[in-house]
Amino acid sequence: MQLGVIGLGNIGLRHLANLHLLFPDAALLAVSASAAANATASNTLPDYVTACSMLQLLSAQPEFVIVASPASLHQQHTEQLLAAGIAVLVEKPLTATAEQTQQLLAIAQNFPDSIIEVGYCLRYLPAAQQLKTILENGHLGRIFSVIAQVGQYLPHWRPGKDYRQSVSARQALGGGALLELSHELDYLQWLFGSLTLRSARNRKSGLLELDVEDISELFLTTADNVSAFVHLDFLQQHAFRRCSIIAQHGRLEWDLVSNTVHLYQHDKQQVLYQDDSYDKNSMYLDMLRAFWQKVQQKNRCKAALNSAASLIKLIEQVKTIAPVETL
Image (cartoon, rainbow, N blue to C red; front, side):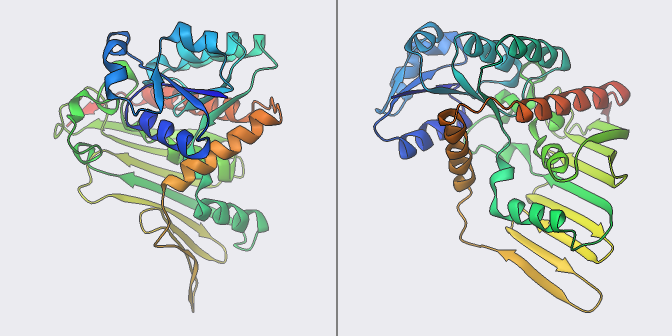
């Protein structure tokens, strides 16, 4: 059995380690997203990984490949894998632009038997699964508003690495708060259905050395006319990630940092979910398990692809109506 990963950044290395954990007997192949880095890749990879070129990876015909290269390269790498008949798990975001997404969707239609998934891993958190169940059961009554917020100081994301050289900080690689923090848009779409943009504001604070927005704020509505407010930033010194759902029978609070779900009502407060010991790497493992099941079942459903594509179109719309303001 052979498995592959394209991209040797933090997320690519995490996937390689997790693949080794889940498939200890598999041969793991790794391709650097930078051709110049291929020569040195073999010296920096774990001994259970073999560095190879893209051509060698395609020739090996692995069971599946994870595309963890910069977003600007996702289209190119994914199309090559689809054309070779290899199942693909694409890290979020699907691509860096709506044009790339359209081209990728067109290619995918040419390979209807292809198997493809998109790596929005927050869906695999047990708290997220419980939240979805609560909403589907209708216990909250009518939903009026949802507020999704995330913020963390970009230089703290990857200790020991220059944030200015990261994908997150560089427009050419598909960076910026909108694309890098699109998990919030994905889970809102997953929980509430299609999203319609009403207004937006994108800003560059000047506190960081980057050429992309580090603050983005959106006002959206769902198909059921629920108001959705989204705040994304690279600036908060203390990491913050929370989703508040305001409904007829109370307010539901999902705190992704403390890993809790609370229900607040007039006369009581309930803890619906809490797990201080949860290892967040488990959501990546669960995502890989689910994708492997899809590969084994030859499940050709493109729902995740279409959902991720709609987010890229939405993000492009945000960028069009709200050019980045420099503060």
